[in-house]
Image (cartoon, rainbow, N blue to C red; front, side):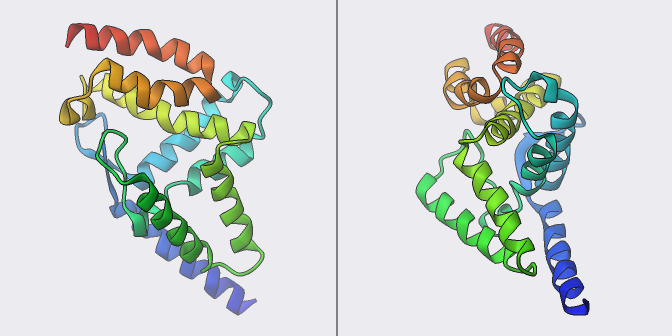
Length: 191
């Protein structure tokens, strides 16, 4: 029992480092969001918006995915959606980070959480598709709330937004995309 709890606490203390990973998205107060805030906010998005999933989902699994999905940024860093990133290198770095981080946990708990993270990354199940869509849905809403946010920082156009975000949101949450698209289009038409 003591060794199990020691391993779990080592993982939880390592996970605390997620609070220091700065993202490209800004919060309502204009400061850059950290990845722990993002994960918490996404879990809340899932809790509130689950009724908009186009397929039956297991809400507890979606929330677990969203709480875990960015832990890899502790080692691999954040890859802004509008930044220039070597996607293959980023994916390899994230997988190595996932194996290290979830490997801190005792078995079979570590393997279970790694499998949940991998399911999110694969984006093939209804739970993963909805979780991935929320991951793409939240930042534009923050950008809208603060007058552009990271869109201004990265020189984003509506076409870039639609290509990099639209298809991903639409795939797992078409109702949310239908709600978001005209709001974003209106923002960019005025910019």
